[in-house]
Image (tube, rainbow, N blue to C red; front, side, top):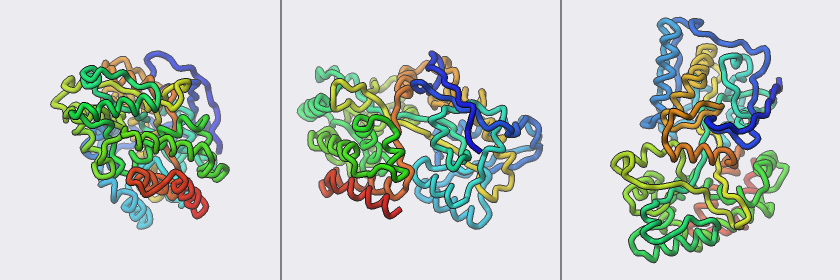
Length: 427
């Protein structure tokens, strides 16, 4: 079964996450819509790795509405550390004791799990009552003509910069890579602040600093998707150029000196405590955490910018993609009820909850209830955000390991390209 019914829709004010020339995808005809009251007493188990975040409130809200609409029904949440999550999920599926809903990693592991036959295709569950998800988002969860996951929300990543520090040092927001280097050098010269804090120690930010450069060296996301499919070599000039751009920023002193040894949360705290003038990556998922670390909303004055492009003629763009998505594994005891929980997570009430908590739904929603200027800026960035995902696990690992080596001085751009190409060939 192939997706159909694609309807172009221009970006409109007040809609969340609408891409330029955004495409909304209508779910397959013939799918059976789930309705309130159809699952009295159903017990659904959900696994996630997002303990301690506002996603818990999103899940609790959907679970409460699911229970209220289905007499005696319940949603149990099991939170597992991310480092153990994929292994435990695969073990549960292999042992035929999986939960009903699995949060899925958006990178390479997802495609591996799909190819292993561990997930149920969702086409038959997704009918009326579900929103029209953005087409580009659905492309990421569709394989071999079937839908394998339901996206809850999307995100985009930008640089946070302390506006008070910039004003104190007389700095302008940089519009090119060279200007970013000059800003970082001025911050260092002050002797008071660190420049851009990012955690290369944590693999995913290491990948994201590269995606931020690839957004300017590739004409579209098709280049990365083509390389994922083996149609374009990872040592092609546009990918090498992205790493070269990053190396220029590293050599120019843009990043904190200990980027390979500090954690993402270390950077959050350094930025919130006004010790680092810039912080990357900032997404909607971290706004409340930054506020909390700073002592409360309004205690830290900061704004957002995309990584500046190498060429002043290029328009600055953020990178982004699916933030959270859920699948129904093979062996789930209550797949139909699980699909009903997905409906409550993504329907109008679910989207309203997401917006109120600074999350960006994966389908159009009214954002007028969220007064945050930073949230509004993220919606603006979402309109042109480029991909931040490689779906081949070995290649993605080669990239993140390579970028860590680049920062440590043990890898060159050519080394990283060769490692990615070798990983692709071996995978």
